[in-house]
Length: 84
Image (cartoon, rainbow, N blue to C red):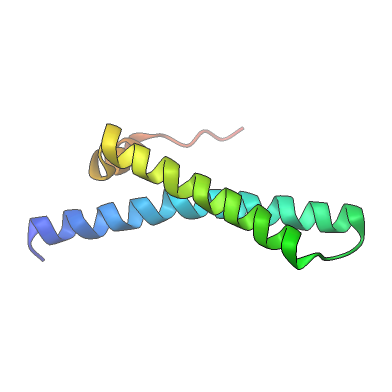
């Protein structure tokens, strides 16, 4: 696989990883809110998920502009996991 194509795939993966991580947080907030209210409102679910997805896209674009997605992926790869 050519190096440029590999970098493009890694950048796409990193962009999706950043954006979708905020969507997961939105899903958790939506679930907790629905459980607290003991009802499901489609407007509430849609609005919370839209806000968190929009924030995730914003953060992914800021990461792309500031650091670069490939460089951000390299920074993530260098982090060491610590067993607590």
